[in-house]
Every structure is written in structure tokens, then in C-alpha cells.
Image (cartoon, rainbow, N blue to C red; front, top):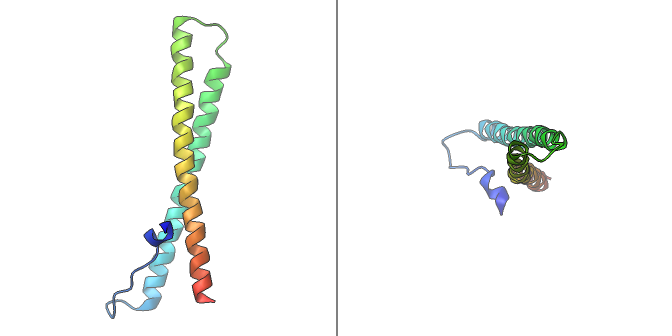
Length: 103
């Protein structure tokens, strides 16, 4: 039912259908772009955190703290990327539903 978040609600007579469809398409495109941007940012953060972890060569107090921060950062980024991927999946499902309805 997540696709319902993106489906338009047409209220009779206030707007023409063409403008609603164009507006809805832009909403879906914006949602898709947001999801993709979230994934891209997450991957950049993964690379940064992984690089920090890989560069830790000795276990001093400062390195242990940096290592812990990087590990927590990886877990945080995982959640971010999963949420962004779900946005992309929802847009995909919504577009599929729209196409099925139109055909």
C-alpha cells in the first residue's frame, strides 16, 4: 500500500486531468531523484568510512575512537541507503500500477 503515498487524489472539477498527470509525474520524478540521491550519498559515506577503517593501522586510543566512529557511521549509512532504496522501489511499484491502470 506504500504506492498510495504517491497516487494522486483527483477532486472533481477543480483542475484539468492533464495538469494533474503532469504534476503527478513530476512528483514521482522528484521522489525517484530523492531516492537515487540518498543512495549516492550513502555510497559516498560508505567509501569514506571504509577508507577510515582501512587506514587504521595501529590501535591507539585515538585510532580506536576513529574506528568506532567509522563503524557506527557504516551502520547509520546502511539505514539511510535502505530507506532510499525503498523510496526507489515504491516509485517503481507506483509507476507499474499507473501503467497497468492506463493499459
